[in-house]
Image (spheres, rainbow over the protein chains, first blue to last red):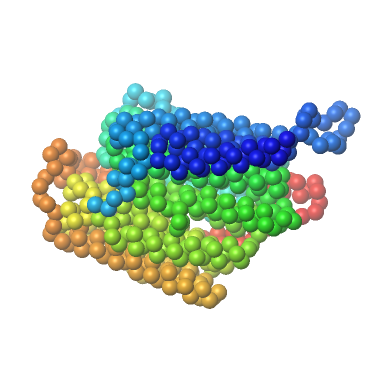
Length: 117
Length: 510
């Protein structure tokens, strides 16, 4: 399972970077979303994938003896998902506005702010 | 020990934003609330600063969870100083915004977002937990996206697309680094990480993580190969927005870099050399970029890059003298860069153009204001009694101490390039009687403004110029402060002890 997830994370990062390097605005935002999801999966993965072991100490014990599912990465992912959701929503609106104003979805044409007048 | 004072400055900014949102339909109240609130914010930041100077480290654990488990907020001298400077810059920017932010931007929530941005900054400076730092960074960048794109002009939106893409990418890289860090050590508390990081067997992974952090913070702080988004976007929004970005946003990334590389990662000569080389190239490329710019704000944007190089270089050298220089430089830079963009905004208001060649004749038209504007410009260069001069002494001495003559050369070259750029600006915009002389239709020139509006544009520049003068002439005090910061940064044991105190008592072994 962990190997599978690791490969998945790799694919998400690679395709995200690839899409970001294309010239289309839509591909840019899809690339960013894939990268964000890749990062979230990575956090999930580094916590260790454990099945059916909640981090709850049984009543008669002081500590957890066994391996358990680490709750911290899950809390982190939850935060990161919410943040990236907000950012992506903003990004889509921004790109739509930019498309409406600049009249192109080709990122190579958006170069007026780079030029020295 | 839990001390609520640590989070008071950021809570106050949040209260201000929410109050402003409740006054959404009364945009004419916004600047009054904002200025009054910013004055209180400066006082609160000053009281935190006082507490830190008396007590040393002031820490707070959220929800009273003991340190490595809960989220800690820590204010040391570095954090407290930066929060104070942030509040001062915020005050000046909100005064300047009265006139130079148009009413339609204010009614779409300019001031609430500005205060959310300041909240993010205050939070980032006190975060003692690396994931918490990430969250503050996100608050900061999302507010900055809104500020940058508010108004929706073509240029702004183009700049915002670039700014947005690269900053979001940097955040994802930062998050990736946090994930790997957690995988390696199983903790996110920076003080706890310091100990566990040194114990990690797999040194290659430590280096890889450090590199990912460097790339993430490098994009945000605009160091050499990663800075191209900055000059493409910083000149597009109105002057006060550029001022708060230029003064604080890149500096907070440098702050994070300093924290991570002095506290979390063990000293590593590879990274020291890398940072020194990056610093040198950043100084040279930023300086040379500034030389050819015609647009005043774009020129200042390149100067930001040039001067980020000084700080990265100081971090790379890493000795106590270098860190003193770094801290002093950052204190000077926040004030002077904020002021610089405000000066740019004032010049625009006086002449109606951003182009250096089309401005002309400022000194003949406004002799006294020109003399005021010369203070930040000369402080930036570091003409001896002024503020930019003193940190460079420390940086150069630190470079000579470890025989990094290239670094010393780069600092001198960077100062020289800044001198050249500012001298050219002075000659073109102030002395030269140029300008096309054709008044722009429908543009409210500075000369035609009401007196109260004029005052609102000049007062913040004057306040910041006075602070610059104090940093220059009262350099002894600032040097004392910077030395204290450097001492704290180079002896992280005390930081760790202050944060992890409760656990230490239980565990018994330090």
